[in-house]
Image (cartoon, rainbow, N blue to C red; front, side, top):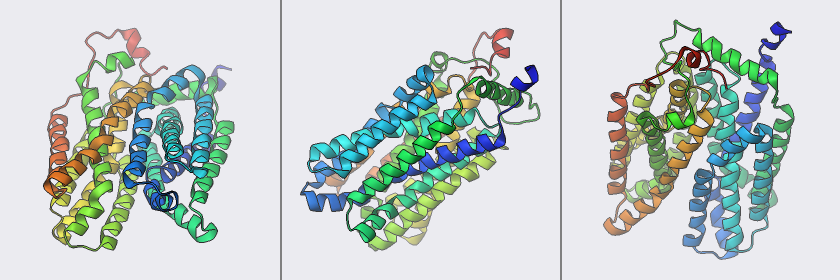
Length: 426
């Protein structure tokens, strides 16, 4: 029985879980942040809302997602992943139903808020936690997971156009997204294993990492708690890097089209550049995941912050095709690789045990990024251009980049031999 207990879970099971969680991330991304702006004009036209009121739904979506990110971490620890997904399913069904039946602005606000909370319960918080326990090559797996999720941003608007072309009704967009997520969540809850064998598998995967003495990738052998990790300044540097890419990305997605057209380019050109950026963003995640198996994630973070910096400076000018190409590649690569490298750094610096809480706190901190478009809009109104806003925001990844270059991995002062032997146990 001892040998049986130490056998890892089958590869078929592990890959099926990766497929399911990647599909969940893909669908929730497609249904929320990337397609809401596409559906909104039709909703405004039919229901007679103002752009100011309707735009507030974006803010509620982002705030609800960020502020609720610690709740699924608590439910996973207390009740498990399956119950957490069940709660997320109930919240999302309520949110999609509210948006499908919406007639008033209050119903719209309730719907977007519920979708933001549901996003936290079914996307990256449970996804990265589960996958980190199943696979040895965590960087590659995270890269695949984040790539598929990013592709949801490319497909999301197509669901709206399908609804309009086939059913001639924007409400069907919310119905299709809700049904697809409901079915995927039901399958996921049946497939996921939460038992002693799963924990044994997680411990075995962790021991394989620790035995890899030839690896040049730093992975902590100390036992960390969430409270201990939150006392280190390195965590806040990683969280700041995560927040900075969201701040730049959200602001660029909100105003890049208007800014580029202000410089004399066609709206179709600007929209095409954003689509290209979304593809680059998605595939840079899996590329970074492959590199992350051989290159220290800190170096990937340095590269990604540098490319974001280049992209933000380029979009601030947007006066030539060279600037537009630098913007598209810079933000695309930087966004995707920062997303990946910050997530990997958390597990490499602090281990798997506190990852769930740390990733949730990092998402909570990143809620600050939701106010990026608001400040940029104020700068536009007062100065007549978004250029100053983009340059101002470029300072943030630049400062973080300098700190990351000199950042050393965190160390606890006193660690017993017993603690080291327990470092990989949850």
